[in-house]
Image (cartoon, rainbow, N blue to C red):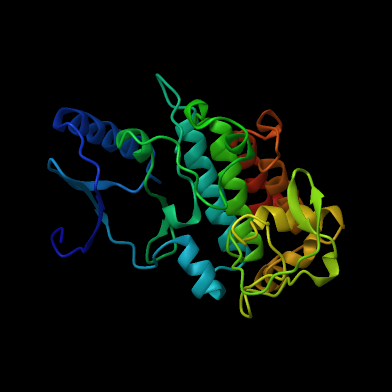
Length: 294
């Protein structure tokens, strides 16, 4: 507890030299002061066998939690507002001085929401602090990581952009970044280097209020990435069918939905150099949030 405020704690079984950990904590604390959307660090602890970092407790949990369990809390306006805030925060990291900063683990479980649904970015730059190599996060790993050797993989601004694109798809569809494998089909064809189902009409695009499983799979561990599903449906001109019913009901114009989808698809482009910058992403999202000011 911090006064009367509950705290959340994150424990890592990663022994780090005390001086390195202290220096890293000071750096992260300074970053949070300069970028208010970063979840502030309230304290930390280090021992020879583990480290722990303390944050303010967020009563609404993560964006992932809300999208999967209470999606009605977030209408179109709230979802785009969250996307704007997060994109601006990541853009600030990417433009920070004297050296650019990459989040390194951007995903919906690392976006936490306070009682007013205001988003905060958690776990920023922890991979570097914990001296971990690049870790593949299922559903968020950019294709360039799978095409390079483990030793040559590096986080870049464009890997953050790819992960943000997945988050934007989650906001638009309400779907899990990785589908489960309760129902699968054996009929697939190749699409842009990944597996997609040969019969798009049999792809289950049920809303988040109903069954969340998909009648398709990636062919790798029996699971389908949301990215794979979106690209397959886009090829068939049916990507709008993936929209969350809440987004369809509360978005003021179908044009805004399509523009948001197009932006997300640009973010997940296989060629990292073709992905937009976070600055451009934030600008487009702000236009969608306030079309009258565009």
